[in-house]
Each structure stands twice: as C-alpha cells, then as structure tokens.
Length: 397
Image (cartoon, rainbow, N blue to C red; front, side):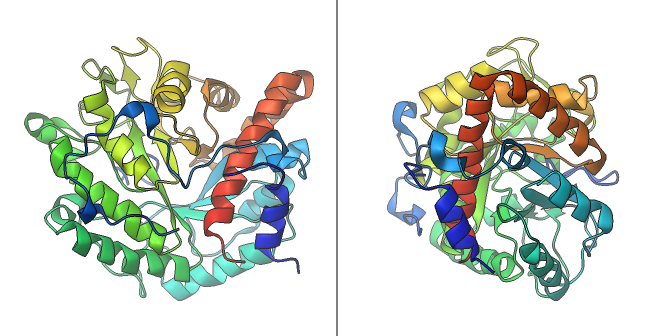
C-alpha cells in the first residue's frame, strides 16, 4: 500500500509550500520543533502585520490537483464520531463522501489501545488522501481521551501556573500519547483571554477554567509552550476561538453569543499572533457575533474576521477551521448547506460538523456551487491544498 507521505507529498507538490467550542456532545459544554517559549519575552511585542507561521506556508492551486472535485470537497469536512469503534455509518461517510477528517467526541472513548485500533482501521481505508483524526484534548473538563494510556491533563488555569519550559515538556509527553494512538490533530490550545471581571460570567471559557490567563501577558507564554510541545510531538494544533471568546457570556454550543467590546486591535489579537508565530497549524474561528467588527454577522461567516483580519492583517496562511457548524445552537437558524458555503466563502477551509447526519447536505451544497462556478472551484482547490499540507506536516510516512 502506498505510504501516506508519498500520497500527500504528491498531492501537495508543484508549489505548495505549505469544541469545547466544537465538542458538542450530550449536554456537556466543551470542550518541526518550534522555539522554546521561555526564550521570548512574556509580553511578546509582535506586530500583527507579519504574524504568519513558518510552519504555515502558502497554498498553491496545484496542491490538490491530483484529487477529483468530490475528493477536494471531502478534504474540507471534519465529521464528529463519538464511539470507540468505527461504525458502518461513519465508514460510509468517509468513503462515499471522501471526508478527510474525523473528530473524536464524547468522554467514554476507551483506552489508547482501542483508539489505536480504530485509527489503524482508518489508515487501511482505500481513499484518495489519508484521514487525519482530531480531538479536543485541552485538559480539565475538556479532555475527550481519558482512558488507560492517556494522562489526566490539568485545566488551563492550572497549566498556566507551570513554568513555560516545564509546560512545553509536559505537552510533548501528552502529545506523544495522542500521536501514539494515531491522533495527530489536537484542537487546542484555547487562546481566549478572559478579563478577570468576566471569568465568573463567561460560560464557554472562564467558568470551565479553559483560559491561560486574564491578561495577554499572562497567557502568551503558556500558549507558546502548548503549541511548541504538541508540535514537537508531531501533533497539529488549533488556536481557538478567533478573534476571542473572553468577553462573551453565552456558550455558542447552547445559544447565540454577542461580543460588544472586541474590535480586533493589535493588543486584543496578540495572543493569537504570538501563538501563530510559535508554529500553530490552524486557527479556529468563533461563531460569536462581534458587533465592533462585523455587526450582526457570526465570526465563522464573516469575511471581515477571516479574510480581512486573520488572513490579511495577521498574514496567516495555514488552515482556518470553523467552530462546530453541526450541532451548535448558535448556527441552527442557517441551513446546513448554507453554513458550509458561508464559511468557505468567508475564507475558511475546514468545516466541523459534530452531527454526522449533516455531512451529505453540506457536501452536496458545496459541490453544486463548485460545478457551476469555476472561480469558487479554484478556491476549493486552494483550501484542500492547505488541509493536505497540514496532514503532510504531522502524519507519519
């Protein structure tokens, strides 16, 4: 069987130099070695105009040229799976719709050996491109993999009390546990800074102790350490939830969150900038509404948030992933197909749906437009190329 490195390398050749907000399971709220964070100033006075990561190179139209349009669209979908084994329904989604990413949900997925058996089955599937398996493994209340073989990870508040070098070493170990089980994409760390006076009111982050600090200066060294440790372990990372959930009160899994304060100043965005510079593989966009940036428009559907700020001002060239567009209440008033289309058109790359039942509608909607809109189809190829490059950066040969 052709090695995954050869397959991905070939697909990405020709110039490709490259929950938890999304963990919405039954009623529980969410969940290349990089420089040592201890070598940098905790405050990190970086400019947002040149924050692209060396590990997030630009994509190319030829990046996914070896894939059919259907397979390219499949690369742009991440589907939730909450069972310790691969069931027929999920297997069918992965093969029929060529879905490229699987997100492990729930808190009873079993031991590392069982997860590895499932990921080995995924690796054996005859697909145009290999599947990457992701998880929300932040620590504390948001740790999906907690069976035998997985360490109990403290929450972000406790992690932030560790020295950056110590925290990075810890994440090398915790990341190695994930990689050993065949899980090469951790949707972490949470880069949302929750002001001290909002911690008790902040349902998605503060109340769950998912934040690394109440100020940027406090949070940045820990964020760099987490990204560095996971990268060294061969696990991709995702900063969330851009441009920040620290100033809301509502959890977007269960309602519509509105931020009336965040205006995307350099200071507000500095935790994301610093963590991108540390080598973050992807950035997850929030489904909250940011009234000072794009009034009435949810972040995941906002070109101002994704294209103008994240891509333009910050220069981020890696994968942009959505917070859950499947089961989250925040997007329930938009049809599933439109959710996928709006996110992709706003500049995003990878759609998460915690509800597997929505995959077919999302894929069909995107394909319908791509077949009649050549420019949109070309954009999809770029997006698929970025996803393939992320896979190539962490999946073993």
